[in-house]
Length: 298
Image (cartoon, rainbow, N blue to C red; front, side, top):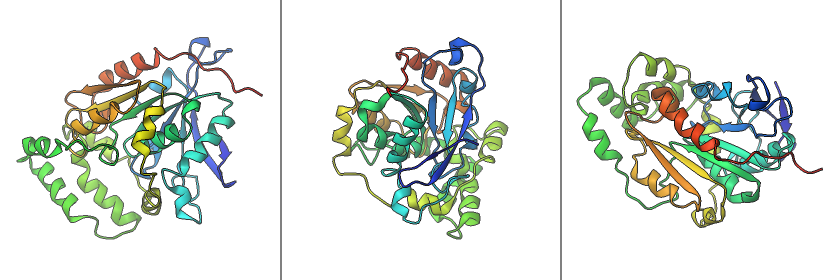
């Protein structure tokens, strides 16, 4: 498994899904950038991303194990594993991959890290895809999530998941946190069928890394800094994202000078699972507009 050196010298690991063939897809001398995919959770093992509805068959996917997740260790100082500080790690990953600029895709809490990187290293960003991003920490737009939830009430499994969310985990450790996440899983999907159940079962969290991820707040002017991010940004929202709503996510897209949003219908928090064709149309269309990257100088 490949690794790179983090900002404090720690060995941090990543999965390198280079499954494509030929010059069109990044071999044989092509200079198009890989997609660096940042998992959410926070602190979920990145295997739940799969190949992002086949994106890995057309683009090289580099999927880091964030600090405290998978094979990447949790640092002694929790703040080094916060989403603001881990941006320093991914500037080192960019250099390790030999890229002049990096193309990021973040899901859910992983978008916090992607946004932190964009704010801190805007000139090193080639483009960014934010998939179902939390937005309340950046925008004041009231959430329409309560309205979406009200439309779904009456389904026994959905109502049970709502009750579990309000109750919280039974114990504050990996077993308790993961058991709770499985109880609340129906909230993450527009429907709760066999496909959704199977996907939810693949997700595993590190409780300590989850807490560390939120251990350091970003600067108060973070939202304003996004006005300096000139790289193209695609925001992908689920029309039935019961945790986030749609209105705040729309407002988030407007913070970026070159931001655009796609709202996918009949879709909750995991578009590549729930509506894979619509997800790929949106992401492929966006990636197709970006210029090819060049290797880093020197």
